[in-house]
Length: 198
Image (cartoon, rainbow, N blue to C red):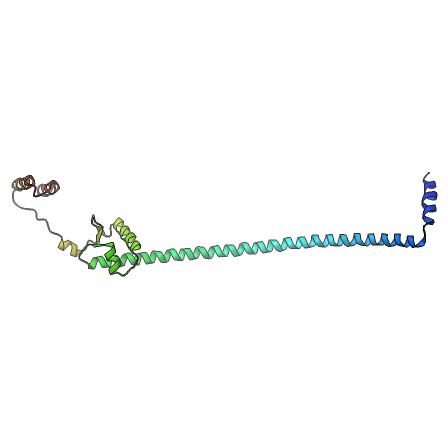
């Protein structure tokens, strides 16, 4: 059966095909092989290009990461330097304010201190004075006037003398002043404690 098919169908029919048709078939076959090879080459080149591109992408990505790390390091150093400079400026401002308050004999509000020292930043002056007050380096009155406790302040403050007289007589005298309304109860209690040495 196979032999008959080969002899009758293939050989008889193909031998009857004219020569130009055979040439076209052969050219088409060669062209198909050529195109297949070209497509395979393109595919291989594309794969190689993709591999190279991936490698280049990795290299570029690593470079970008290194650049970003360096930029972050520089920013951190810059921030640390700014913080250090700010601390130095703050310390210098605190010393300047304390020196100024030591030379003054009066209690001054923040606005006067800012104006006299030509700081031109009232908010910064207020925050610095508040910090100095909380740390105990300057004093403050109830109406927010600042001062330092220097020897001048101690001299100008009235010195309370303890009397060598009889404390009982002094208390009677103070009680009468309290009853007349000339002194307050707080003043009376304070003087009482001083006299009794409590």
